[in-house]
Image 1 (spheres, rainbow over the protein chains, first blue to last red):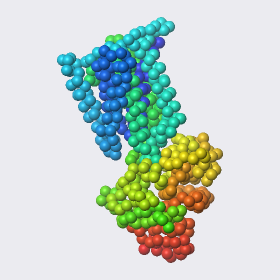
Image 2: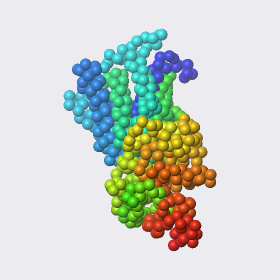
Image 3: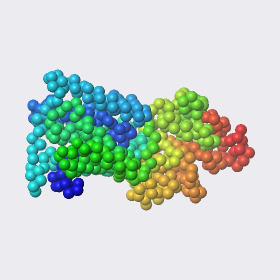
Image 4: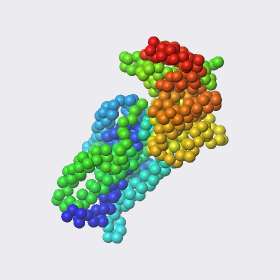
Length: 302
Length: 235
């Protein structure tokens, strides 16, 4: 029986994975809300952050992490300004394909930078201390898992406060629901999009730190698989709203963790097929999203 | 009377199809001007062009003598023109108060008073339902919210796109009464409506559009002239 194989250890790891995926889902969902753009290149922002951590391995941890945030946020704005902004009025298909191009371009650039020393892959050792294990009640918990869960909770709470209690948050919620009407009321398009890009960049940098601790060998396809899984999770949860997208991200991370723990070690090769079979089942039963109500999605964009 | 809003030779095209052709009109300070005409005449397109939602191919749009043509919708809103869009377009998932607060995005001045007062004085119902989800309001209440939301920006010019569409008769009366009150507050109004006779009777003057062109101008005295009204639509 699969469930009997799910122990506390598995649940802790699954919650940790769900927390990281939830952060990525929020980052993707925020930009989608403003631009109706599914940013496939989100993973490459994380990859850029991870490389920054690797290339600054000799620095003090705080400096290395700060550099990671600076690079990822700058790259987020560059991506928006140079590519997404000129294409803002184009069809979703054009924008999606463009994000593929951006993703593979960034991956290629990373490879060029990485291979200068003759090998592919750079170790990021400065933040590795967070990968140590502490034992709580007989369950081994890596410090980074605790960090991931705490950071996810704090980040989501701060975001909820920002969206719920501030003027820019109100404007972002309005723009996500009906961008054109929001602009007609005087909401500055560039300002709400800029806020979404900034927040999404901060989240990508945060995820870059957490993932780099867990997987210290950084290569050009860093975070690629995770991004694909989170994009699927976001759609499964309901991409139309931020909280359903976030729950979708958490759910697919949690499910992946649980299935991974439940599968016998020699059967983990079946993990992706099990996860994606579950995804297809959910989409067949609830195509609008696992957590979505029934809101109309067709909204004019300007 | 100095014109607050002026259109001069305005052309708007959807692809190669002309929607508005060489339209010139003026709305003076404190005036309520009607814009009527059959479906597809270009009434809504004119309002959208003024707000910068659709680009104009030629001509000029001036607010207090300054051209606003080619500017972004949010810039035009912040310059002092507010639109109550067709279909109300309220944010159903936000509360009534949040909808009103969004209207403040385009407000140019801050004085000490309650910034939402401009809306709440006119529609006391909104104060009662301040914390309610806007999507739960009736159609008429949503229309009051949409007008109130535009007013909190304290615009110089208020554009309304068929505000009485789909409303119960008593609610239509409420909306028209509100328009009179708004005019008395000194706000300049350009009103697009399907209720031709009522609009002509209310407005200082009413422009009739057909096929994107200005066909004639009616005065309140024409409202009871059935023949002229029919001619305005069918000529």
